[in-house]
Length: 245
Image (cartoon, rainbow, N blue to C red; front, side, top):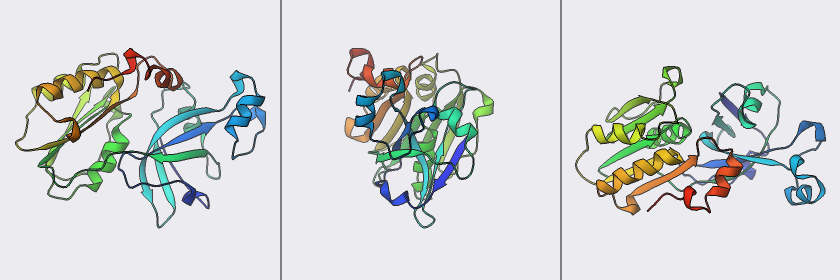
């Protein structure tokens, strides 16, 4: 589900030029009758924990500075979650609260080729990166979706071969196995690999075997299977939440 938004508050966000730029969406219970912007510190002091604001992280699919608009893609799984059901029911004129943006990656034009690896959560960032590449860019993109219905067209240079991989997030080796079985181009590679945490651990192990230097690698877990974002963020400080360098 793609939501396009804009307006007079567009310039408040700090757009940084990274192709993996992301924002934090802030949700509060509608029944509380609160009007944005929210003082989250004050609300946490005044409200019981079950009524605290909730944050969810989403990549900006594209930003149009001239039109002062941005787009965010949501993966919707029925009524599950907070952000996706909101996106599904959003209508013209609705408002939302976002902070940011963050990000740290953009394609390096000096790289000989590019390798993109990601699941549905990473498709917006991969799509933005592909669109930012020059027409003569070379490389490979491995894009995982749960089933064939999740596939959609992503524009990019003809020299970037897109391979769509089908498999559930409960099978964390799917992406790594496909990359291992595929070709490996010559020259210096720049890698963008993001998605489910255990899947990215398997990808990281493979890239270490291939000798990819850490400085040519943007890799992290965007989420963890069976976890809410709150639990996922908390686990980043625990051994289970760390992806080895």
